Length: 293
Image 1 (cartoon, one colour):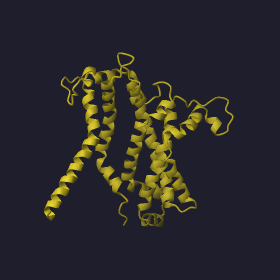
Image 2: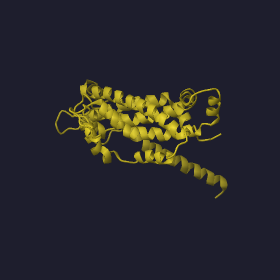
Image 3: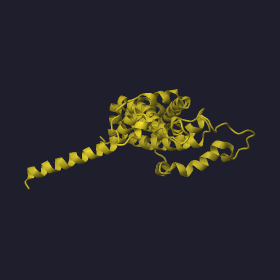
């Protein structure tokens, strides 16, 4: 086999594998969109309909008419933006200290933060539930009245920080480390305080990283299901993920797959829009710090 034939065979194998991977990744999204425009009978039709013969928007009408879903969508928006803002605010300060300031025990703190991201949610849900039910027990205080955290959006914000804040801090630390030290030295020569150096010089330079980590933290909070189910009782505080799980059909045993798919598409659209809107910033954030110079 000649060299040219080998290159052609390699290209065929490469693009063939690429097609298989793309199909494997994109087909679930395609099937969700297609199923959201089908009636209940068409979903279970035999043979399988890979494209709806009688498309209908009735599933979307049912979703928007569902008050619990709309309330959950609002709660998810409030909780996710709150978690993202707190994660970036606290994580940026922590990352600046860990990435730029010299002090003992820095590596221990960094590896502790990394270890916190490895715990599965189910392993800590019990202790978090105790904290949410009565925070005074955890901090060994004698409270006359229990703090009203359970079944509130504040409970979700506090618990979501468990997995978004360590991730944000760890990622931003590497970006702050990659910034040249000459920037701080020049700022100190000009009389800037450490906080002014952080806020006016270093923080704007990490804007791509802030957008990237903020978007990932938002997605983590938006898609969270376990804590939202555990720490809430009704849809006054529950997010949109449990709202989708509680969809019911006309019959008690019926699972309205078309309505669930329509709700899933609606929930996914804001994430796609945000990724497309911040696409350039995300690429800059993912590549920033890759080359140090």
